[in-house]
Amino acid sequence: MHGLRNEGVSLAEGLAQRAADGGPDCDWVICPPFTLLAPVAEAVRDSSVALGGQDCHTASAGPHTGDISAVMLADLGCGYVILGHSERRENHGETSALVRAKAEIAVQAGLTPIICVGESESQRDAGKTLAVIEEQLSDSLPHGGSDLVVAYEPVWAIGTGRTAMAGDVEEAHAHLRGLLKVRLGDAAGEQVRLLYGGSVKPSNAAELLSVPDVDGALVGGASLKLDDFWAIGKACP
Image (cartoon, rainbow, N blue to C red; front, side, top):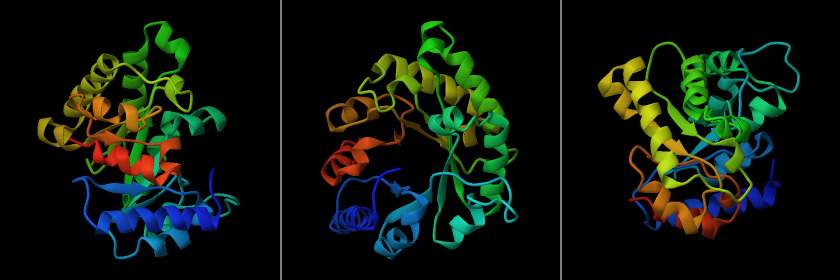
């Protein structure tokens, strides 16, 4: 929940221009607040920068004041939607079953869901990290299809300045990759992009993005500064 119209458009235009001028061999997706989707969509039109929403409802339409549907996002030019972010799970009590229902409606609308999983600090301290993310992933994945992205975001590392150690990230991502292969088959499970999210910044991006089975980053606060966001993209191997 950051940014007004001028700020959002300026960031989007700056990123689109840099991408057009050449840069890292990576895919850029930006997911601004709902109020900025329309102007940002215009700002990145005809560029290589893709657009996504931060959430969607489980229904395509209906009496759901304050919500937004996947087809509405697609209508604005979105290709992606973030689902099950830890802040949604914690602040809005979203369950993995709800995330799965949202993911299924998103896929029906032609969107690629970015499904987030991650453990809390207390769960990590109790040695339950792998069990927690396994349960979340299993219960959050839509039935059928492999056109999705999974983001591992340890809750204790989001916006705190703390970052998981490379070995911890490797262990979590290897576990998620194995689960995806079991669920989707080896070939399809290998193709799912696994992102790491949790205080990713220019100073640690290269190390994190070089970890096996880390295919990209789910960037939070650093995406609000164009130079920082660009530097993270440049760190892609």
